[in-house]
Image: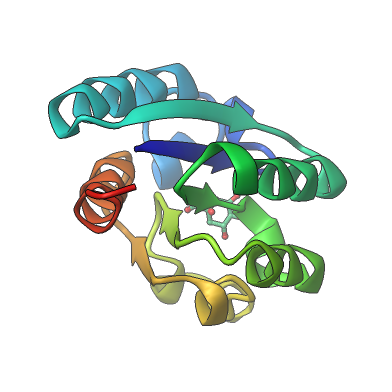
Length: 145
Ligand code: DQA
């Protein structure tokens, strides 16, 4: 099975961006952790990042024909994007929502997720480990695909 790991706006700056909130781990580190976990889990992965809402939507649409599931950290679009929510609902792929930080312990505007209602579930607050947990969840679900 194949999984798309999709990262939204500002996550390209991970490691230097607000390290007090997001830590020193870079997006390349996250990708390496995911690659190592995927090998153990028997998954193949594609790892993408975009700062553009429409590009993220294009990735979700394209995943329908090339992947069995999606790990999605939509960044701040999580809290604003009905379009991303609709894209996920349209492709009917299992999506695990991931956030490095615990969005529920932060500003009120981060408590709302437009991804959560169309996701299998949400993992937040565990840093980069959350991506690995999400891959474990999808590996179990996608055994036969
Ligand atoms: C984030 C949380 C969002 O609120 C924020 O806008 C981000 C990163 C996280 O991984 O903790 O860009 O998705």
